[in-house]
Image (cartoon, rainbow, N blue to C red; front, side):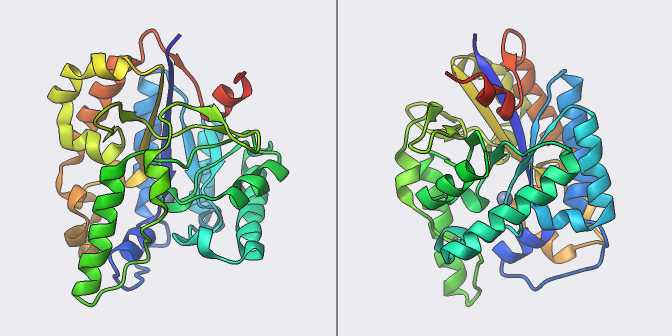
Length: 299
Ligand SMILES: [Zn+2]
């Protein structure tokens, strides 16, 4: 049977400001990615009867409103995975002790909210390493979902970072390892025994099947593309909480980011319709589970 997983990286707005080289901004006690984006995704998944995996930057759980939202996800049957403690884009370049501490603290804080052990990890910025895999295995994890086998994405990211340097701004993002861009498209068990769930792309052209690109395609194209999506034996659809925000949500909160982040210009209604069209095309006849449930049944 075809397998399907939907997941959301809860990257706070502060992380997008860092990508764009904007100064820190602290107008709201709670982050709109959490308070608006996460509930919208939970409602979208639930409207299709699907449980998703939400990857949490554990330091965010210090904010009571975020913690309450995370607890509601657990109560609704969604999975909380680790997206590190503070989401350093250059995690792989940190000293090993720092990496280990990022993973260990995130694990402890997310497990406390779940009330059960954490099973999976997604690396910040899709940058992972063999050391990270070994540390996750030692923490008892069963899977990692950090690989994005999409060469056009890495090319675009390298270009964006270079362009910002040219205009004297410094992105916190890093180019990362292009080797990940050319890896296998199918899930497999890695050298550490973890199940490796790559983000899905269209085979051949390696067009990314993530929130940003799905919203660019739009609902009509995604309805037409449903057979292509259904042809994937394992479809791992990755979203970011910001994917269900638009400039209306941010106006008066974070105007600099409204102008810097191009995908906020598309109305949330159109993005929601695109994601719903994608899900409508693939949910029926698929074994739709959280990543930890898929990992638990992996041979
Ligand atoms: Zn992230």
